[in-house]
Length: 128
Image 1 (cartoon, helix red, strand yellow):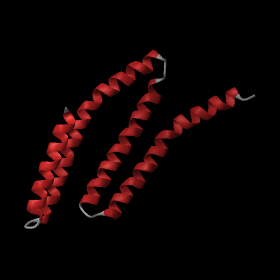
Image 2 (cartoon, helix red, strand yellow):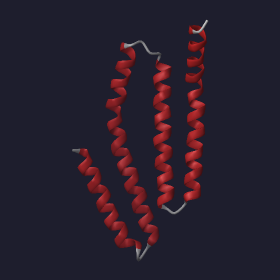
Image 3 (cartoon, rainbow, N blue to C red):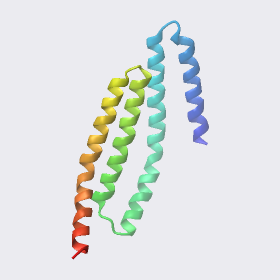
Image 4 (cartoon, one colour):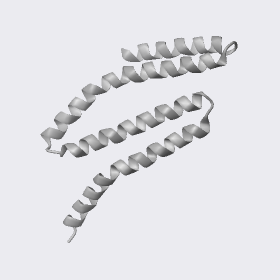
């Protein structure tokens, strides 16, 4: 199972970071960053199967592709913003992390506007 590999990578990196942090703290930050990127790349490759299934489902029930792509972009923004914020927090930069999260929320809101407009249009057409 992939989770065992991910946990093993995380534990090894944590052990190395703790050992090295006393002598060279900046290298501990780099270890954490590289480990996060490795795990992120490992997981992103697994998302292709999920996207394929969602596309097939959308085609089956005749959902416009723009809605599915927008939703996937919103989910991607949320994950990337969270990842970036956590890296900043690990480096001791909580203020920058909160700004990344804020920017991610604003971008999600901007991306969701077409879906909200479409939903409101549907509600207006249903209600006499």
